[in-house]
Image (cartoon, rainbow, N blue to C red):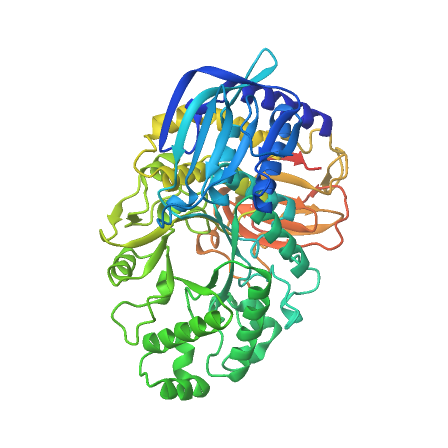
Length: 635
């Protein structure tokens, strides 16, 4: 199987090189002028940086050389030279000439008979020029060329982001690194990692270790430090998110004293108690841990969806704090909570980001406008906060939640292409909707840019759903106003689909699914697969009377696959009464097992044993029939 995938990627690389060129660039550059000639790229291609250049410039040259070898098999020779030479690639860091924040990332690329020159007044711009150069390479009769061209380019927006959610379904580090490579290739620069939520903590806390439950997957602090370095090499800044005070089931289960009444609760009924000194000690220490690992200017502390905030009204400790703060309503009290989070962030040298539902326009005291608002819901709230002068990141639920509990696999590419950072979804569309109704943000809104979000989705499904829509978002944020229409994007997409394959995206969904019980041990009770499986994607359909507890399938040596989630967790409302036929996808990947029903993640749990075994099908209560049982084996 590995040999087959390697052959596929080799063929994809060859096809990609034939089809690529500046005409199919993504995102589109600000200005492109193409000439009649072209330059032959030869083995031993010289890649130069001026001798006195900062070390980061040489690192960018190395990134380019490594990617070029992956793409063409051509090895480069790195050199320190002030001369621009014919047939060579030179990276030049120039003196800054503009204070414009977008101009900081600008670059120029000149390809001609005198040489190939990438120039910028910033290392960020040099990296984006290198990525453009890689997209311009073409192949003919086994030789690689790049056409003569003059390009001047810069982004429309400074925040070109993507959010990943490893707290609800763990994402392997290799997957995150691959996603970083793709982001860099398409000039996305901000990776938002949602590290904690009700389901689990994907961040290792040494201050409060019980938050990392035994057997659950999480990133160690050392792993995250290395990931930060890796991302920085590719021009991607990682912004960590901790979510306080809601979405706190995991930490309250570990430390019940964080609750107003000192007890554990179900997911949507969990909220930290701001009246207790221990709560502030907890948040201070965890925030300090995160701030020490991530050098980003920003720290995201969530503050969204405080579903159980009414408990604060009846909590004596909260009432004392409300009195001390001089506020009489829960909304006003919540604003003081956000303001205190801002103070903690500043003490750690960070600029605070919160979701827009953390702030209620018109409720005093209003949190300071130095807080960045990450707008995702309620267009009227987003419009009011923008009008009040808050700086914003646009992650409108529609269309930028590319996958989530509610919108499942997100809306169609056509709806994503219609969006730009000045537009905000004015309705919650159906999954797969071709169009979204938008409201305009105020003309003078301070919009850093936008961000696509991937919530609560198994790793393989993330890639399946992420592309091509994430590249569409990337192009809008870089080339706003000049990106072209949907037909133009779709015409260029096949080239980039092959480029993604070369970067290793979604190889598992290219493998054919096979019937699981085609060669089963007939006559066995229960029905049993002929071979043992450990890592796999199993798809099937069930006809049920209502949502079953057990779906009738066991895996990995006897693990009974439930439909309902573990105790304390909440099944999505849309999955609580599954009558009739519904589609299921069960993925076992390393120590993580995840069930997705009708495109919505039902649960994701850890399986420390990770043992292989036959898959069995047996009768189960409330399950009438099972059909179309197909399997893809993972390596």
